[in-house]
Image 1: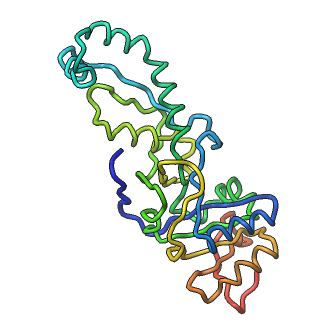
Image 2: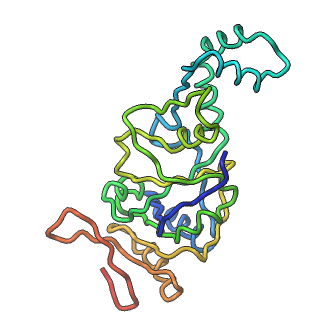
Length: 254
């Protein structure tokens, strides 16, 4: 894969929730106290079409032979290799997808902290929280490999085995999803393995509580007032269907 390149961002957010309020508090502690975040197993995601890719084999004979000589420098049976590649196309696609999903961990983020559906789907129906980071935190995550914004498409991306640059494969398989997920406006961090990763917790800038957050979670979050981390709570104004964040201070209660 190409080396990590963050690009131009400002803030990134992670929605977290659990219907067990004690577990939700533990999750917030992992961020604020331990400076850890999970690079998740793509098999656990709610999209059964994660990391789909199609293998394109369209090319001319000269280009195919050039690739053959690169991959098989000591062999001389091009016709058999090329025919076998076409026949094994779907097996190659499926095996590659399973391999990628089994090895790499993904941290799912978004630049949008006020998405009503995201609060519902990923923060346990507004009972969880959304944590905001300076985007420089991406480069401090253990084992970060590549990161970038997801592109949304009606069609599975096609990687041409013969003509596309090798780096293009990773970008297509990791950063393409169906358009039905476009409301997430997702930014992904790809790590070399799955599991818990350390990051620089000094780059946490905000904790945003859901509108239905428990008293216990709000009390814990309030303990970080005046530490340089801003604490907010989402509210839904009576005359709109939106949710907006309001800053919590020592003197404010919602």
